[in-house]
Image 1 (tube, one colour):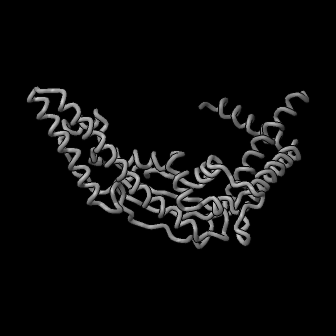
Image 2: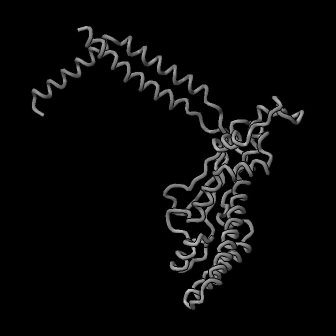
Image 3: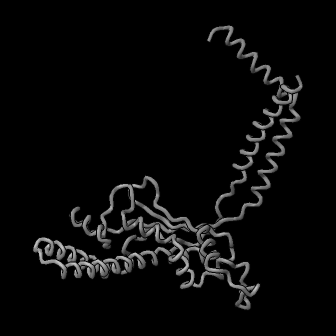
Length: 289
């Protein structure tokens, strides 16, 4: 940059500063308005408590890639080995299944969670709903879906997955760890039952195929696949509570709510207000000319 360009740059900055000083009331008013808006928004944010259960994939029994591919093609419940950076095929399926409507509505009914999810509509003393109408299953599903966060931690070498619940009612805060710990247990039970059911269906299918062919090579392959699924059923029945995930850290009752974001929101408000105020000042100066 030569001296002339540097001088022009300094003049432009000085000219900009003069505009800001001239319309400082506009800039300050913009900052005040934006800060007030963000402050009001911060005041409306609910107090949130959260509880989290940490899990890692259980150790899997490996099989040859050929047998794994063939079993997957017929829809079997083969136990897949995990790889670095993810929670394995069964783990991903289990986490996805946990967030489905059928799984969560069944869990809500089994544990009678509607009075806890809709505590403001439930009369605890009388043991009935305030308006006489119980919330629908869809409403309960949407409610618990907003509360729960279920995923594998990104870039976790230990393949850690977690179930987290954000809870806004401090009166029944003790229900939060029960909710997520119960989900972790039910997740394993559900995955175990699904695996056994899929393997039994696959065995029945393979036996039907056996009766249709006399080719020794095909029959030998079918017998191997049947054996593979029998092994899966045996392994599943031998694992009681930790079929897909092992809990390494159970959720506990939260003592304090999550830190407030008020200061961060105020800083954002000041920044946006400053930018918007400077923009208005430049526009007013431009049109005044």
